Image 1: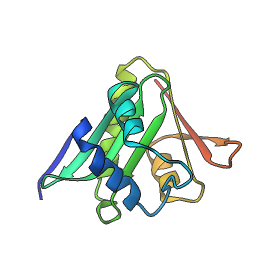
Image 2: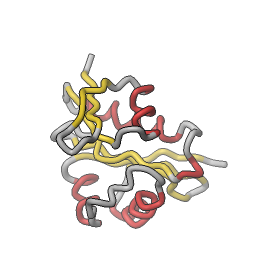
Image 3: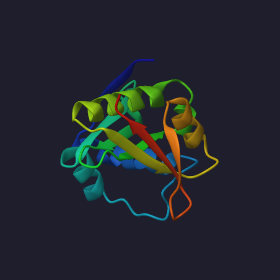
Length: 141
């Protein structure tokens, strides 16, 4: 199986939305994320990346270069635990550091695989948000 990690473009938005809705955890069901929101995130406020397997998008990540927020990191369930999410993560974090940011942050639901993923990737648990999500931070070295 051929895999490709590349920068996301506007034409990828339908597949990004499909992957976002395919996940089992952290589905963001309380928030509507429009195609325009995704375009804003990958073209203006930050950058996105997609993981393709044999030409089909199976995961994506988006980082905000203005705020240091990890806006999204999602993989189709059947492609989890193969290292693709970590590659997306590492590429995004490296790019955000290259933009001169000193602090990155994200939130995720407690008790999820995402929480464990970020802990293993070296993120520090900074407590809970008022809505009860786990706040993670990472600081530049």
